[in-house]
Length: 182
Length: 190
Image (tube, rainbow over all chains, first blue to last red; front, top):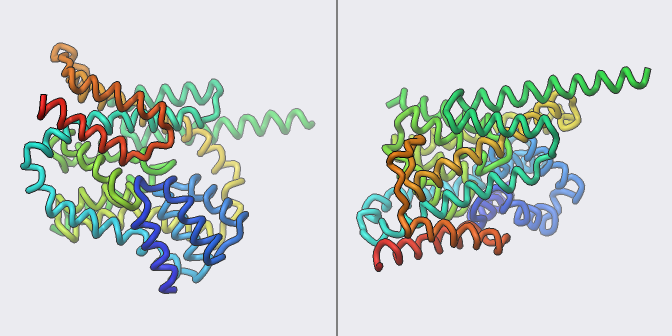
């Protein structure tokens, strides 16, 4: 049990950028090294982690911990993966204010803000490329883009509307298939 | 104090519950909530938090929750916000692991995800475009009259964009570091 805590602590400590960057390291410890899970089960877990809300790191830690040691395992794994972040970010917060007074740091951040804008733009492009392309998905994407850009409705509603449209659409498709069979 | 802690917990719970697709998908929601609650004074501070959260180890979601929670209410705030962002995942995954193993093939779940997936790049792109307009062209809330290009910012934008296209596997940390060095060069040295 302590082992699962320390394993996820290491995974939290050694992955920069979170989520997807974490998958290879989780695979290394969980499948290759400790054999807590088989290859197929691992792939299933990643699929579930991607299709449920929330950070992928937390989703996979909770699932693997639970499969191995039940509720206690899932709590240990989740605390393990969260703890390094919590400690590091609090340390940075404590020093950040003094640090940011420095003129050179200020100049660096003028550049970094542009860089991060590019990273966010790229993330949007990357996820767009992975999305299945059809009329419905283009409409939903433009809908999301417009609603947020012009601040028309809150993002929670944008997501919910997307989900409801998706459900209605799959039910219609399913109905059509049923009728085709008859 | 207690009401602030509860607000942090509840807000990050909402953010955790409505983020599909990890890290970057969370940025639009965080931006919206953080300004609604006036938890950061300006976009500058938020984007600095995002930069640091991307360049430090651990899940982005936990980093940014800790940051905002700590800024608002110290250690307890950091814990409240972090708990908020992990509780939805934790509960949903436990339910799936326990009882709902057919989860991913359920028609409602699949339909919902099919609808949510295309919306996610749309909302991320809109936030990306808004940040680029602000930090490269000085355009905020589409007030084009303040339009004014900072040459340094434009060069950094082009360099980082081209670099990220050519060097696809580049880790965000390197791009953030290069942008920082260029910032020092253009705004400090030159």
